[in-house]
Image (cartoon, rainbow, N blue to C red; front, side, top):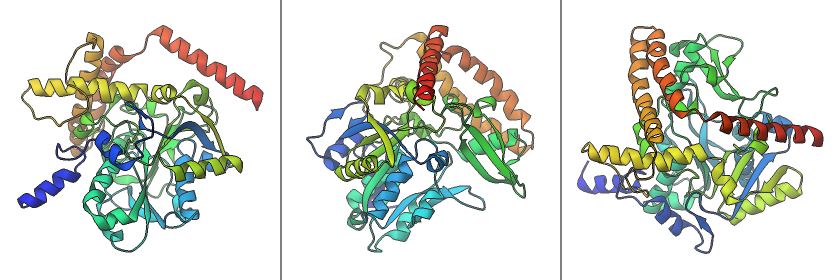
Length: 419
């Protein structure tokens, strides 16, 4: 690769110092008159919402709003296709594709915690004269925005970006490790479902499911009952995610998240938190509300941030520590929007941050060894004590857990009375 190519690659890489940060990019993309919050970025409207149709929302990870907005953009003629992750066959369980019909959009819903690449799809659509909406996690959206800033052809084509709040990415080992614990070895997996809803539980009570090749049914379990299944343990997290500070996809026209707030967690159907930065998206949602297709209520910005409180602790507070740890170790670190340092961070929180990073790093080697000798217990025996130690450090106090449970119970009872 020559010098010019290296410079261009650095300009579009979401972690390179040569690329714009999210604040700089958003200032270029969005109306300067929009209010801005340092936690969620620029915003037009912040709300909690879900699709009203029960069958529609039951087949979605949360409130079904991501696929609903994508569908409406397509149906209203704002775009000719949706670029998004979907189900695949063969060696990879998921990949990026283009959907040009509502049926294709709805057939590829739900969260897909699996490594995917969109480079081939962008090469495929480049120059075809059509307009697209791109759907992706914050770093994917930022990469696409950076690419369109130097590629005039793609800039004309990708006219909307839909963001997905992300805790961190996962390697393929995340799905493989949980499937193996349910009796399906990595080479026997046909399909996985990371978010099977349970009508007998709240929105957090979803299950992980796996279907083996030639099997008729899915085997399933709560991910919290599987080693490494809890998102907070950060198993199989790429190291790049340790340097991300973008929670609410600050460069996307609209971003969707799980509504992790007591008022909504009691409803198994799920709700989305939605942050809009596009007048067109606002109009689509408002029309959906008026037509009785979407149920929504406005949220305060503080509530939006609170729904991702753990993510902010990991991405902002934790990032300060990880940056300083690496600087002290003589390692290169990328330019970020938070300052490296330990000031104001308790010893307990320092321990949680460092143990979480250690958990992530250890998970890769242990699972690779387990696969090499075809013995899952190598992974289980190695990870279980590390996870137990982390849980002792990070477990919320009894009072905090009790208050949270009371709030969820209150909203659950109120919802049942209303219904």
